[in-house]
Length: 209
Image 1 (cartoon, one colour):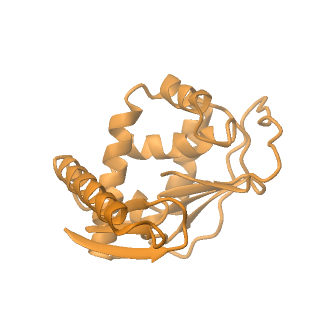
Image 2 (cartoon, rainbow, N blue to C red):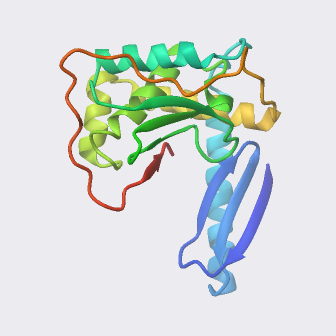
């Protein structure tokens, strides 16, 4: 596995998988022994995660998902589950950072094309539900996960599949073009749709992982 180590002024060490690369951030002020221990721990974790992801099924190639189709899916899943108010749906090209995100000020949901194209249907349903649920709980608290679990009991497995699919797409480095130029799509109107709770200040965007 390829590794990338950056030494910074941060107080804590961090690691994440970026495609096939394990990216680590290590505090430069730590003693060398602690730095080496953190690197060894993260390397073991990265290898375990890579093996687990490699064992997951790979979806066959599929044509790019249009904004219209995605917006219809979001509206349908919202109506079937949390029934929150959102302002629209966008498709972005985030390759390494986020599968999807919701802006809590504008209430616009943005999904990475690398994530949505070819993703298994149930994993994509999880991804959409994940972002919609943030309009109820703007965090990853136990209350938030209870909402997700209520509507998708197997969300943990679907999250792994979504992560695996996104990692493979990022590794390929391909950004397929949508079938036609797309604009932001507004959500379908739902009867008696109630707005979500008032959000505390400071919450602007939340990412998936």
